[in-house]
Amino acid sequence: MHSLAARYFFEVATTGSLSAASASLHVAISAISRQISALEEQVGTPLFVRTARGMVLTDAGELLLRHVRRTQLETDAVLQSITALKGGGHSTIRIACTQGLANEFVPATLADFRRQYPDIRFRIWVDRATQASQRVMEGEADIAITFSTLPAGGVDVLYTHSAPALAVMSENHKLAHRRRLDIRELANYPLALTDEHTSTFRLFQLATNMAGIKLEPVIFSNHGESLHGFVRDSDAILFASYISIGPRLERNRLVAIPLRNPEMRARTVQVQVMQGRVLPDIVKEFVDFSIQRLSQTIAEAPG
Image (cartoon, rainbow, N blue to C red; front, top):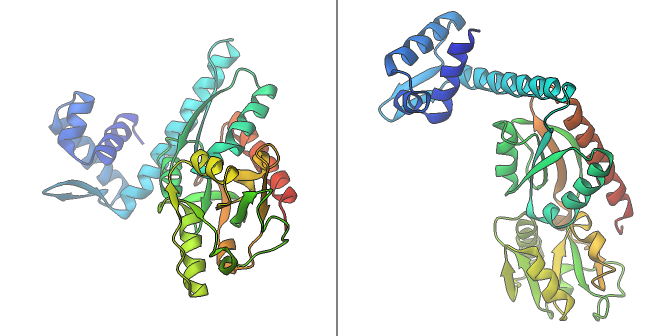
């Protein structure tokens, strides 16, 4: 594929119109249109549907866009490697993760990895699971580490494991000595819950619906640290995966107790990368390192 045609195609595909691509590339619309038409003739099928609101990718166009993104990322990786051979530049690993993983697991993993590779750089986005996956699909992030209640589409899942939500409370709580709990037993205690965009919220809703009860949390927040502090200093209970909460249990005098309700186990933690992408060596090292740490953490979780 001619590099100029690929470049023009990519810009139209990502901006959604010839005029926006023209403004971005500082190239005449007619020149971009000719390249797109030539490319469609070369592949033998339309790549866009022309509408009044812009250019919409066909299935063939979506397939080609994924190929172009992979090619660009692999070219960038080769150029970074060449720069490194000359003793300049730094590799950057771009990570998208969900909120629960951003509090403890991801920062600790980055710190440990950087002890082995002190020249590495990181870029982190904290997103909803769907947005984290989207960043990987579009090549903005190299890896997504997410909690998910739905099958992942459009990405390669290199690791997946059950990540149940546990009941987390002060070690002095009246229920702290229990080995397992049912969500119905929490009705007499204040509950702290993450917001409606999180997998924990969805599990909580599903579990209470299946139990036929209605529990109203006394505090909602999109900031996990606020919930942890509230629970530490009260008789409240929050819900979190051991991967999210494990390292801070002892230092914050908290305990995490499994729930019998199967709905609270209906999610996984996943490591995702772009479909079909050949990962740079340093990214592959980080993916393997992250998977190893996840496996170790999960092995420590209460059963």
